[in-house]
Image 1 (cartoon, each protein chain N blue to C red):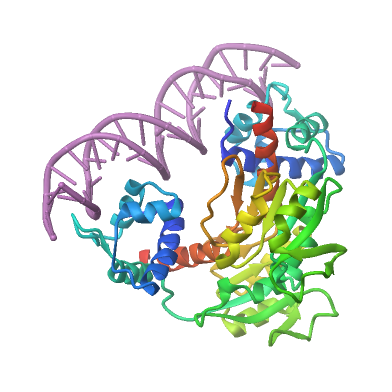
Image 2: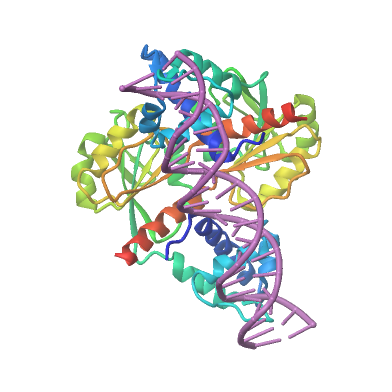
Length: 210
Length: 210
DNA sequence: TTATGTGAACCATTTCACAGCC
DNA sequence: GGCTGTGAAATGGTTCACATAA
C-alpha cells in the first residue's frame, strides 16, 4: 500500500515526540495526547499509525517504548548513508554542521564547487572537489544522496554531473530551480524564497480580506 | 474566495518563470509551455491563473508582459517589510545573505541571540540584541516578520519574546519545534531534518517495494 | 468504560472535457 | 484551428462515527 507524503511527514514528527516521551520516562500515550502535542486530530494520528499495523492497545493507548521502536524501524536507515554536497556557500557550510545530519548513519564524503578558491580545500574535514570531477568522485565514494546548495543557474549542471555515475538515488535540493532528473532519482526540495513569498502573500491577502 | 496553499506555491513559480521569459524577450506563452517548464499539467496552470481573473487570450495564450505584471501585483508587498532574525548561528547567518531576502522591500532590522559573545555585535551591519530585550526592540523597530533559526529547545521562548509586543504578523520557522502562537500570527515552517528523513524514508521504502 | 482501528462520509485539490472566444 | 476558462468528474486526504478489544 502506498503511503501519502503528509502521512510520512507526520510519522517523522511522531518519532521525534516519542523520543522525548521515552526520555522523560513516560510509558503510555493516547492518540489524543500525541495529536494535542503536534496540532493534529486524534483520528488522524490513529489512522497514520494503523497504516503500519495494529500497534496500540484498545482502551489503553500506545505503549511509548513499543510505538517508538516500531516507528524507528520504519524510518531507520538499513545502513550508512553516503552523502555529497554541491555548492559550498554559506548555506552549504551551515548544512554541513546542521543537526539534521548529525547522526552516525549520515556521512558527508565529498563536496563540490566551481570556485577555484574552494576546490582542493577541506571544510569540516571533508574535501572539496571540482564539480567537473563529480562523475569520478561520486562513483569512487559510492554516494547515494546529493545535497544541492548551488545557485539556481548552476543547479541543473550540478545534477547532471553528480548523477552521471548512476550512484545517486536521491537529491535534497535547496535551490529554487526546476530540475530534470534521470529516471529513478528521488527529489525533495526546500525552497526558501518560495516559503518566504508564501508567508508574505498570506499576510497581505489576509489584510485585504478584513 | 479562498486560495489554496498549493495554488499560491505554483503562483510564485509562475512569477519566477515569467520573469525569465520577460528577460529573454519572449512575448507570448501558453499554459502548456508554462506547465512543461515547471512540471505541472496545462489544465492546472489555467485553473490557477483563472482564480485572479481572465488574463489570457483564447486561441493565443498569455501575454508574458501582461501576465507577469498581473502576478507581480498579486505577490507584491504593499510596502517595506521589516524583519528580525532570532538565532545567529550558521544557518541564521546564511539566511541574512540569502538571495530570498535580497530585495529592497525586505530589511533586517534586528537580530536576537542568547549568546553573550554575540549580543552587542553586528552581523552584516545588523545589531544583535539579547533575546530578553526582544519585546522592547520589536516594538521600537515595528518588526512584522520573524525568522526563527534557534535550536528546538529555544524556539518557543524566542516566539514568546518576539511576539510579546504584538507587532509580529508572521514567522518563518526553521526549527523542528511545534510552536504555540498568539492568535492571528501566521506560521510558515521549513523543517530541514524532516525533509531529509522524508527523502530517506522514500528511498528505503521504494527499495522494499521492488 | 476507555481508547484503538477502520469503513464511510466528507472535504480539498487535480484533472478532464468542452464551450467560448481569438 | 487553437488555446483559454470553467463546470463536472475523479482523485487524494481528512474526519467522523462506531464496532471492537482491553
